[in-house]
Image (cartoon, rainbow, N blue to C red):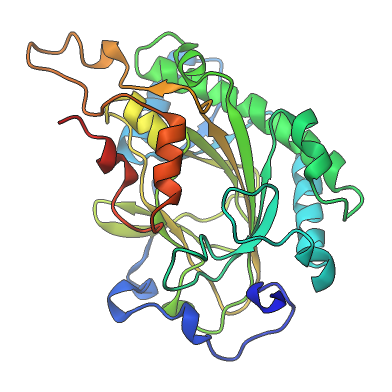
Length: 341
């Protein structure tokens, strides 16, 4: 079982066969451009209308943006990164206590994406945690490193506040009441994926994570401060998002695309690997309550024209999440299964 994890400290000289993508599905890294005009938004700005306008432009054009002056302290971020590195550096037998390839189990340390379903594996190990309510889940979290529970609790609380702040701005940017998203999404769940991508012998042949969209409402990503890996798809071309140490990368998940009636896009993105350095990223997912009914906001389609109707049918988040995990990560956009007839 131990061989399932990549974070062993052993460096492969060639890529094991189960990671090699078919020729038609490789990253083609030489064709990837740098994203020059990626939105960088100062969310401490006091010019609310300008701020909301910038959010609207970013969400409708890219589905992604970066935020600075976000209110999460540098100490909290540094401690989170440090404890994550410490976790993946632990001895194998200690890590394997948390290993599972069952996607319904939390917490779990696993590898790739969904090892039971996929034909080709991905060059990634990850630790998946439920983070809200903290009191309900903290006892399940790793006891090693010793500071893990305290550090991750603090980080999760600060990230949650940031998530609510951004959801308000997104609601306003659609012309809705600022608490619209918060009301519709209900008592939001919060998950975390701590991703570890070891150096890869042949980055051209595989992915850290293949192209996918996020099934939740909003994702708040702390990128590795020095190692590139995140790429997003815009107008059919892949672009690299360079890390900026003081910023979080925010992306619209499938649920906000549905709630915005397709005005905002849950964009395809992927993680690629490199030969030199391990890369760490920490993704926090704001998720609707399982019973939340997701449907396009009425003000966005009702008054438009006589024939107007919502693009997506009503569904619960539980129904969506089940569908998402029953498929390969890089199949068609999961929202395609929820279109109105």
